[in-house]
Amino acid sequence: MTDLLLTHTSQIVTLAGPPRPRTGAELRELAILPGGSMLVRDGRIVAVGVVADLEQVARDPEVVDAGGRLVTPGFVDAHTHLVFAGNRAREFEQRCAGATYREIAEAGGGICATVRQTRAASEDELVAAASRYAGWFLAGGTTTVEAKSGYGLRTEDELKILRAMRRLGQSTRLRVVPTFLGAHEIPEEYLGRADDYTRVVIDEMLRRVAEERLAEYCDVFCETGVFTPDQARRVLRAAKQHGLRLRIHADQFTSIGGAELAAELAAQTCDHLEHAGAASIAALARSGVQPVLLPASVYAIRSTKYPPAREMIEAGLAVVLATDFNPGSSPTTSMRMVMSLACAQMQMTPAEALTAATINAAYSLNRGRESGSLDPGKLADFVIHDAEDYRELPYFFGDQRAAMVFVGGCRAV
Ligand code: NIG
Ligand code: FE
Image: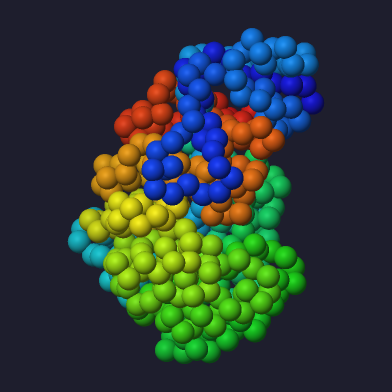
């Protein structure tokens, strides 16, 4: 593979820094190189610096002229529900007319509606649908996504989704980190028998997922009317025994102890947290659990209750931002839209939002040593934005295509 020499940038935001997630004031330290250049070899970053220096060491490089534009690491989206069939545009229309997200779910729509369609779809159909969305992620500058199962809720269907994810990672340029979310909802055939379903998740699904090595993480939706902290604990403990790392959906609508459970089990992340109070924040801080905040899912369900990002930053939490891409509460692949919401609605600064969307997100997926910043030795996953300054990323919103996107040093967009 020939060398790649990136030249003529307005600024390279490297996010270089200590090899760990960033907290407190570190979230605002972007390590920017004005007018910097970058040398890539064999898909990895060799050096970031002044063009004249890099030309000395480059071996017959292919030159990529950034055209005086901004360069950042590729976005890392640490929470998506990427693989599903159909969509819920009709429910969206009902919500616009006044129905709430939870009313629709209680009437048999919501997650269960997508489960019915996903069960009916073949693995090939799921790969095709997800490939289309993978193209959207890449076009917006996202180079790594976490992807959850959870629209199968039957062993064979959960495995089908996870296999589709694996194929997606092989057939597109998007890097995919798989999470098993069999405990996403109580399926209709188990209504009123949540404990029985929890046993199926543990005894059948988890075992198969681990045997086939189909997931790195296990997640549970811990919420009133879905899985109790006790049921969530059983699933997550079993997952840990199978060698999976843990994530948990908690405090989305009600605070029932999911954040405390994340702390107790030393989960990698605790996600949503719209209703997190001081107790939840203190628990996460005690155990170093990373909060993954999903403001697009607040916006899209017509809520105004955004998660308390400022309190979390002040408490020393290594905040992450993600899309929560899914057909119900958050139909967007745009990390720039998420950053915009975080700044405009949650009082995060543009620098904090960018750190939360890149290096902190990478650490939350156990990819911090490979991705999330433009440091020598790391994967050359980077974006040339149609912008000059990083503040433009959340400032201009609604039109978020990247100019060029590179994954492992190869042009993906
Ligand atoms: O993260 N909270 C639960 N699950 C998703 C929503 C999934 C759906 O509506 O299809 C979420 O918001
Ligand atoms: Fe989610």
